[in-house]
Image (tube, rainbow over the protein chains, first blue to last red):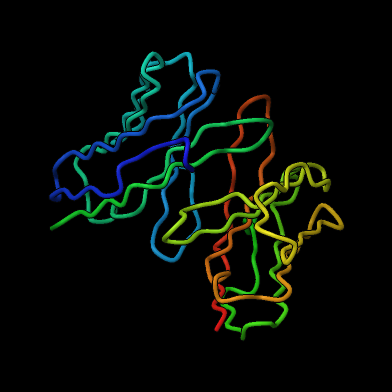
Length: 110
Length: 115
């Protein structure tokens, strides 16, 4: 995950919005992904965005893509304690392979 | 579908022993990936298979690691001999590639502890 960068940690209060940021490297990536990992579990796809889009909204989730700056963000509205997890952004590199960022640990305080 | 199945879920072994991790991908998926996750290095891709053929094994740490996929429904990752630094959570993931869209489905992982 060295080519995809994320901040390590984010702490928010329940009910606030969370914004998790990511910078990626390959401007030709067609899809960019956000995965969520809950404690003791594998990664699960949360949402994705196609590279010709600037924004995608899915209920409480908003993904913003700035292709010029290779910057991807995930906003979670009305963050709940159940949103506490590690969030990974990922881009497709050669073939089928995904490159994952190092993950951002989101802690939601009640 | 049961999702990606991995076994065992936990493995504790002594240094020098052989360890075999197993994975059953989702039926119909044509790509399979082995990852390793540690606090120090995060999530690392070890190897991936497409249609049972290893495509990229550049992430395999060293010759002690080997992976096989004898058929579309089964893969193994073997470590022989194991060392304490191999302690990690090992994930298997599978996907069915549609054009450039590639959602990988992860198994629950095998937590390996080498004493």
